[in-house]
Image 1: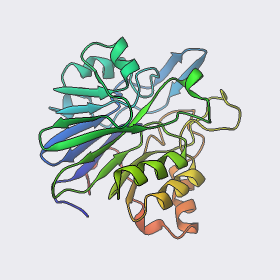
Image 2: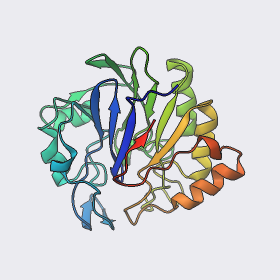
Image 3: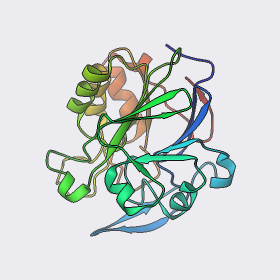
Image 4: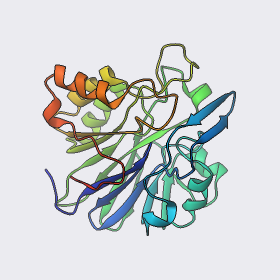
Length: 252
């Protein structure tokens, strides 16, 4: 199911503008320029800047923040942007650290306009990753007469995607954070979906259109979009993949 009012514009990394059911949504705000960004015991290296500045993004009704603890999902300029949004949704842990955030536990709902937003589970690495990676969340957006949209956040577990579909119902559009992010914290286990697990997630999602984001612009992404496209093609799923170009609106 698609809607002429639905669309996505990739700003860069995990940051995208989603036009949905009359509201403007922004995922994981990151607007800083390339550079080195310390994050706990590791340093993340940003390679490319945003396709749009914070000012160029314009008015945002709701920010969907998968987590606040890593600079590739919320950087300095992104933190400053939060106060511009009417509503910011994230984890309860993020809400305890940053004023103005509404924290949602998994399966809790929040309504913005006519849109119901459901927080859904995510796992930022292999089993037990929460102790080092911290809690993260995904989101499902739904409204009458509109496609159901899933935003995965930094989730590496395709089994959780199947659980979300079982509980929420059919998904029409899935914005998956891919790129096989890996800083060596868990050996060869990735922090986000890789090409293989993204295919597993796509199969769990039935007929959903798949929009990959958070797959470029940082050194710790270990797989390219080209690899993802080949994997989907070999799996017979190429017709379901929509790869956004940074700064170019993608109708959904």
